[in-house]
Structures are given as structure tokens and as C-alpha cells.
Length: 177
Image 1 (cartoon, one colour):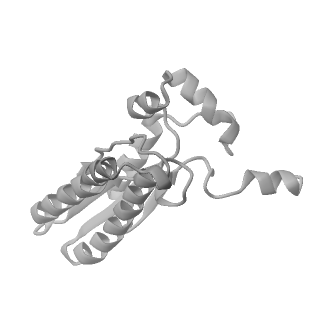
Image 2: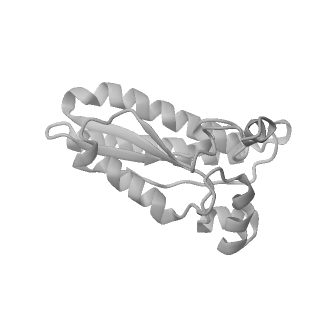
């Protein structure tokens, strides 16, 4: 089962955060995924299975979206890890995939640009040069986590960002790498 619903709303800075919008972001990004996990777990408890949730690099660190979005993705990662611990005895694996910046209709609408423009905006921040993250890359990662090839992987957050969250490019540049 793949839980992939999400919203990314311009909720403002922490000081000006619209709390009604925060509630909406949490309702879709966290509570919606929690409902999917709950019902999938019930259906899979007798025969095992795989649950994959779409999180985000915002589940790892700030700066990839508004605080409301970041908090919702941190909560989702916590849910995935807790569910993996609880559901393992039933043979149910629970993981998440965390993409970096992808030119999806959701992100393009938020930024007010088209897919090519958004892809061009991500290039300067990419550690892995010569490639642009596409939705298909994220789908392949999710399919892997759901497949028998990942039979002993559970509680994992598979980050699909070309090393953007793994290294600090400013430090690499400073030390001449």
C-alpha cells in the first residue's frame, strides 16, 4: 500500500503561521497517512505485506518548506518508525520514501512556475550533477520498498535526493572538494 497524499501550503513563517492552514497540512500529510497505515495494517496483519508512505527531505531537516509542512513530514517519519516496530510481528514492513525537490503539479503550483522552471531552480542545489530528480525516480524507490527485493527492510526512510541532505556543499567548496 502506498500512502502518497500530501499538501504543501504557503502557511507563512512560524511567527505568522496560519493555524487553520497548519491544521489542514497536518490533517492531510499526517492524519491521512495514519488512516492509510491503520487500515492497511488491519488488512495485512494475517498475511504480511508492505506499507510505503511518501515523506520528504523535509522529514530530515528544516529549510525545505514551511514549518507546517516540515512538522507534518517529521510526524509521518515517526509514525512509519513506530508502525514498523509494532507491525513487524505480523510480517508487515513499513517504510517511507523521502524525495527532494521534484517538479510535481503540487510543487509547481506552490512556486507559481512550470516544471522546467522548477527543475532549473533545483540544479544549483543538486550535489549529484548532470541529473534532475523526476517523479519516476521517486516511484521506482517506492516500488523497490514495496517489492520482495526489500523483504528485510522496515522502518527505513529511503531518501531520494542525490545526496542533497547527506553533505553540505558550502563545506565541500570551502575545503576544495
